[in-house]
Amino acid sequence: MTAPHRRTLLLGLAGLGLAGLGQGTPARAQQMDITRASGFIQSTGQELVAAINAAGPVAERRDRVGAILRRAVDVDGVGRFILGRWWRTASPAQHQEYLQLFQEVLIRNLSSRFGEYQGLTFTMGRSQARTEEDVLVNTVIERSGSPAFGLDWRVAEVDGQPKVVDVIAEGTSLRLTTRSEYSSVISRNGGNVQALLNAMRQQITQLAAREGG
Amino acid sequence: MIRFRRTLPGQSRRPLLRPVLALAIALGLGACATRPDPSDAEAVAEFRLNNDPLEPLNRGAYFVHQGLDTLLLRPAAEMYQIFLPPEVRVAIRNVLANLRTPVILVNDLLQGETQRAATTTGRFLVNTTVGIGGIFDRATDFGLLGHTEDFGQTLAVWGAPEGPYLFIPVLGPSNPRDVVGFGGDLAMNPMTYAGSGQTMEAITITRTGLTALDTREGLIAPLDQVNATSLDPYATLRSAYRQRRVTEIRNQAGGGQATSDLGIGSGIQGLRR
Image (cartoon, rainbow over all chains, first blue to last red; front, side):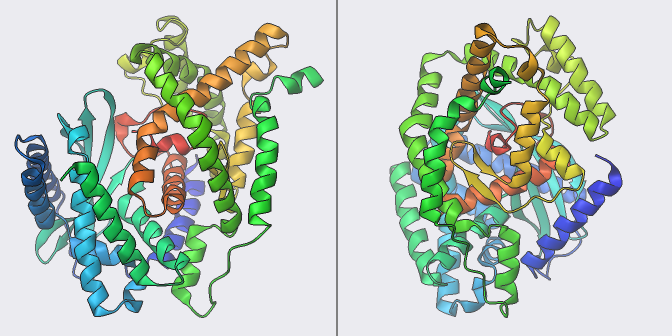
């Protein structure tokens, strides 16, 4: 692929992205240092892997993972980004409920798969600055019996602290995919945010059932 | 000419595909997605970003696909997974990947990617000889890492527009550019022209069947995950497919060394872990 072609294509895509995303990146995000970001991912990743591989009941490990995620992920910022244009139409009570459910979905999604994640290891890959606001930290996740895969963490500075604002698996951004999913649920229910909240609540019940507690 | 057409991979799918497509069209009834209120800038932006003006039709096709997948494709892939030991499946995957390298090479060259073309050539030479017909991926041990490339990506590099998102039963997420690309890859595959006769036909059918099984088998875990956790799997797949294609077109390996060079090049294998 020749450079000019690629650039035109990328610019086009970037333009589309910007048009759709609007004020996606929070204004409070500041310049992020690459070394700091990768150090942050290294320590958070180690904590997460330790919590997942720890002995003990699922509920206990889930609480540990939950505490790490609450500290390391900009849950409110990401949640708001994902709700996107529907944030404005939702009531303050719905905002509150949504953020609560979103956090629960995030934690339950991990804890329902503790079994599969046993023995998981991660190593740091190359690290690169992406924009002025955030850093993309590359890691390689390995599990016995399945091929290694790359996982990129988007780290931004939020209120003076490094926070994860996105996870990108093999080129697929979790927050963009989830945004598309949630928006589709709301649109297909005639723009009713409550429909999404109900679906999320049901999903948490199902995930809890899978995890067996 | 008739012989030649009969040996095209994908031909075997046609008797199945035709009624399915007819049903999909009937379900969608040529309906287009309701365009958003032009005064709502954010809704319009989202509509353009999703790039899915045929959404009702596509959702019909997705519904049909889910039915076929539940009844036929996934069970077949599961049997494949259960009855063949992992070593054999890896060997099959490697052979299929090696058979795909000529097509990858042509696309590398059409995109002017000489470095990647050299890697692809090296992989083919090493794996075909030292790797015994591609059974073992020895090229990776030599530092020649595989990558995917297909004519859909080449068309994108050449500046062809993506066109509206399409969901095609059995084949999965796509768009007009990738459909044309799929045909282009068939046309540039040397095996398409390797002659006729029963042996060749058998080889082509086997290869097509194994590619389908291998691709679906690799997708069992990720697709199960999407279906179990997404509130709208259709929307999740659409978003994931389109993001993944952008990364592939840029030749920007999302996961560095972890990227594989498998599958039919329709892009959906990008969901593989």
